[in-house]
Image: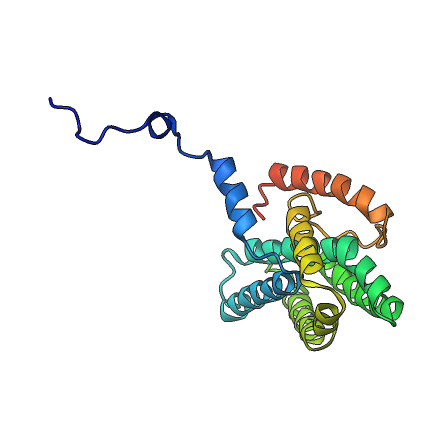
Length: 213
């Protein structure tokens, strides 16, 4: 069989396709990690799940799994914001301390509801009322953040800092807790130390309980 008229160079011959890890790293580098858009994307994901839950209120099959997923994502979202976003709010906004206190109060209320939901199933009497309360609270809080806090953060931080914060928030989700822990520390540096440890325990519990979140 005749050789190709255009033989490959040595570099082309030795070139190997990137591994899955390398491809993932390259994709992460290309991804827009602006903090504001990262948080807004979380809000859109929550709303999509809420609409699914509302549309399937009469379908108990798979409902608990979807609620578990929502709880896990809400916990990840709140924990990484406490770790990386709240310190910036405190530093950059004149009323930062008061803003963070309001954020923490909203998180604490949601955590109590999620803790109660975590122990129930769709057949339990309190399940749907608690779910409705959680959805209403998260929707209200998300709207308040998008109309008030996020524009203020965007104005107070430069583009590079927002990209760095968004990257850290995205990366931290991989080791963040997936279950509500109302009594864990909610301020740095304690939550930076305890968060990963609690997250590891949660992931082990999820695996043992076949909780795919």
